[in-house]
Image (tube, rainbow, N blue to C red; front, side, top):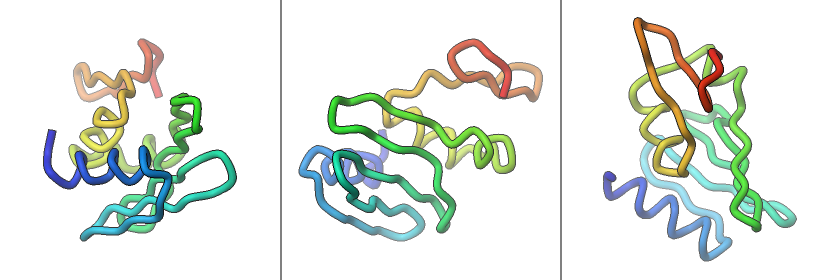
Length: 90
């Protein structure tokens, strides 16, 4: 995992706002929203549940987006150019 992803996860654990380069965490009520290049990619609830913004993922399935989501513990795979979230094509 990259340092930026470790720092992102640390901010989520501390429940604080954070920004570095192209990634940011914005704290809300009982959740943290994660953004990449200003695009919302996920919500991390205080109970650890992660909700992926599938619209953003399908629009920009870049290596960086995938890396950030995997760092949050999301089960993402890419097969034959297609993206799968928990085994379901996005």
